[in-house]
Image (tube, rainbow, N blue to C red; front, side, top):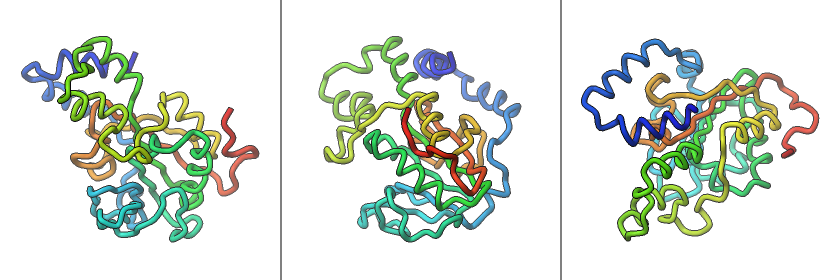
Length: 231
């Protein structure tokens, strides 16, 4: 139901005068999911930073031309020690990997987090996008403009080289299961309008209404038996 509401609001309500003001009023009654002490820590890691480098974070990306703080393959954080960071953020990067890679990737991200640290993972919300296709199918037409710059490109990342395009579709339940299987405790969804601004990014895909942003915690040093397995 939540994903239907997201799609309905985007298609039918977002153009109504006063909609965003009303939205901000409702936001006042929502609480942050991540404590300020975590946001204020200097030990925060932004994985797959692209060219949107976030202040107060260590920004890591595979492409040197994007001028990150650290150039690396985010599947293997060789520069980072165990239990080094209070927060690890990965915005719209996990969907670029194949399913069989993801348990090892999540385990590596967990390794560099301190016990009690937070992982924030942002991915496309395909359930909400599917509802949007039902409510407004014209947005998925095959004209050149829509195909290259619109929703079809957004769903598959067709503007990127083939090796960087989207390889997997997540739902809230499927991503939560992968996180739990990798030794995380899932906290729930985050909103870019409620959390500390730089956490989910400014002009970043995580602030798109069709972004699913999930917070999870590393709650113990030793991962549970069977960590990383995909059921």
